[in-house]
Amino acid sequence: MNEKTAAGRLEALGHQTRLSIYRLLVKAGDDGLIVGNIKKALDMPASTLSHHLAKLVRVGLVSQGRRGREIYCSVDYDEMRALIGFLTEECCAGVNLEQDAQDAA
Image (cartoon, rainbow, N blue to C red; front, side):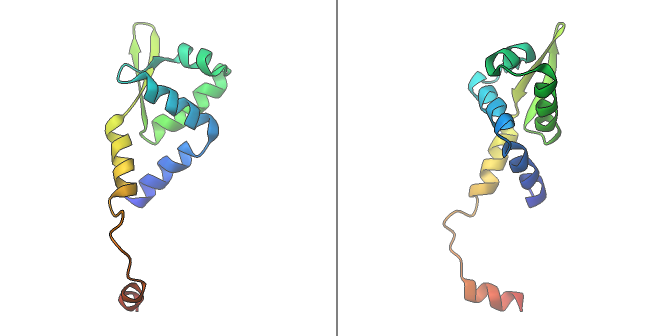
């Protein structure tokens, strides 16, 4: 994952409503939730929910599908793990500011 992709996903999750939707879907597991159930659980107007779900889908954190006549949403766990991995891949690797400054010169 590159910084631009990670930044877009973090920006999407940086909105409280989208974070609430995402966390609810994470709790739901692989089966996800029907859009109507998300609306009910979060007491949110359909148009507002649709707007926020579209953003989460656009950045690749949530996928949508149909079950009969209903639309369901679920977390793309591979993408969630990729984002977490991007954030932690260099954890505690050490930083040498003097060497970084020399490399930049």
